[in-house]
Image 1 (cartoon, rainbow, N blue to C red):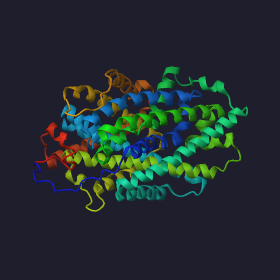
Image 2: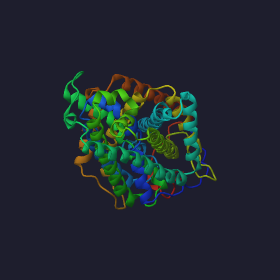
Image 3: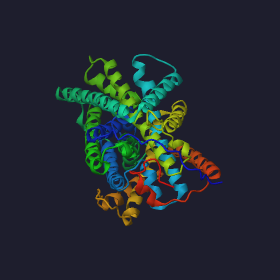
Image 4: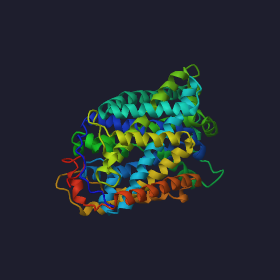
Length: 461
């Protein structure tokens, strides 16, 4: 049965994001949970050369960013990778699965932040049951998200400044301690070969550290709420990624010099607290813990913003049920998508381990990035009428090779991550079947996507 009822008119999303807010959005989304929560886990895989996987993850992400910038310049609408996949291949099932995969990566990333919030930084103040912390955490994010993108992104500016200040504390304390004679620079070339060869240790660590660099792609899902996205996206995204990557590498170098990799690994998600305690024994750890709390809140907020806008954007294309495109008449936010993604995030927080969440998030996004890098080459035949950013051809080609490799078991990725990802994708396949049976197959016309700016709530039928 095909749903042929005309869609209800919805108010437009508010274009509240300018160049500065977008730059803060990118920096704030990349910085956060990855470095604050997974530094110890990465050190356990690579050893003392902790900077190497973060640098490798930055290179892989930077290559894929070129593809995203070309595509968001051609098609400046909500939807991101799913929209580009739909346009390039026109296969509804593939589009649905990419949508579900990216949405899942957003909520698993937010769930990772909630885990770090409750299991690490909050414990410096109080020990509470995880289910209570998770419920308050996810509900609070949903309320901010519902209030509106203007409030959400402005909150992101404040939280980004706070989380950058936390990493600057690590850098300043580290430089002071190393300058005073602490630290061992020889650790920076140590690679763990206990369980595998050096190549697998590096690629396995890059696969995990890649979680720290994800987030830049979230911003393309905010295109309909950005002022002149074709013009401002390239500069904001590339500068934001460069800033975040540089901070990551410096923090990794300092952490490795001040603490052996086994001690960082033993500290787990509290590795930066351990680094601070060694570099500045008198520093109030609760202050840094408070910063860590806000940092993971910031990451989670942006991920939940992305997930809800992605659901909204693809519902407009009728790949998802139209209910996900419902916009609140006063707040002008996609409240049904916000509620749905929040419920999924809560379930993940209370049921999956932090390192598995982080690794699975990276795995899912690496698979999506491989498809996006292919899509940008396929869509070269589709010429836009307006001028936009064009990626050098070598960037998506190299991105296909690297992202594809890191998403396979050959990279040294644990089997458990593939199991979790497989379960999530199986759930996605079931949802697609349900949508197909109750809504029917909707013919896809790529020309409709060109109308995303004039008709941001769905093409005219």
